[in-house]
Image 1 (cartoon, rainbow, N blue to C red):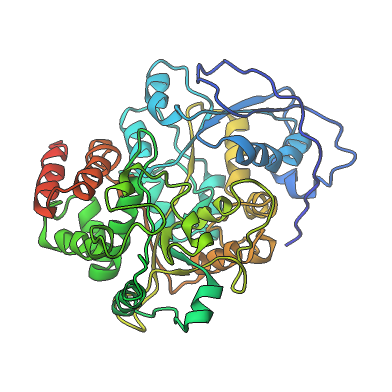
Image 2: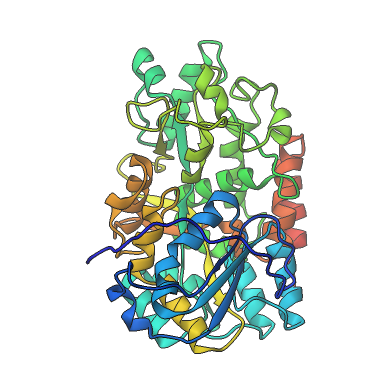
Length: 451
């Protein structure tokens, strides 16, 4: 597989109000250019279009939005399709309203399977073309394909991905104190207790995220549900095959509570247990840099937060300033199970140029182009892990591509919005601030939609 990637200066950012989305970050408009300096071999299969335009909306902002736009620059040049991207933090709240009013973008990059299901139920989505489905069958696992499928109809291929459940730590601290990477949940508990016995608080955590405050806590619960009870029970939980207040869910909450609700375990470098709710998730792990805490639970994307002032003073590597290991299985030698997230480009307009863009975004060519620009990963099996921009991202790609890895999508993203993006988030806040496990689980259970 040849990877052709030509970088160039971004074209001028333009205002694009056609979809009505509130613009908060990057808008990219890739127009027709001369293709003489671009090798178009990889793009011949998509055809050529004279004057075609495709609009894309999503939640991807700032530098990542710039890189997204750059990832289809050569495709646009070679096919003649002008692509305009609009990133907004209001995308998830607005997209259903825009779709109902027939004012949605041609393509929406949806970050939650639950939202994709809602849009499909509204009758607003265009099923994916055969070319998109062929790519998914070739480059993605059946688990990933099902997240873009509703009632037997395939609507969207996966795009990027993230692995959740990493435990960030300082390699220097571990070496100095003779700490070993735990191989089971019991060993993780022993490690935490060993650190706490020195008078330090081993864990640091933060749930604050504006209107989404609480979501980092849901990641903890999801990781423990998968490891303690396995993928089958996890699937039953996220689909309400078992109630939210099932004893197995309570067990996961109480296991997490041994860290997050324990004043001896958190919140190192920040304060008491109550500060978890007010500490921003972006800064919650930084006390590791000052030796004020030792462990922080957060996804692969947290790599970008270790240098909050820019630059590269703090390195992410096995022998660097910080590194990470996956939350271990319940028992040593148990199966590798991970939770994660991703996005799905759904279509609101039925047109050949729209499906050409979606076919490209589902291809191994796009995955290698985008990951090579830095900062992200994909579970696309045609992706070369060596193009990743860091050792951690390379490792994450290899984990996702390993056929022995059990992957499950972030549970709150699979649940109905009234639960996954509302009562579950709020329940984590109530739980940390004093409510019992049973109270919180009963409240969340009562919020589950009846139809």
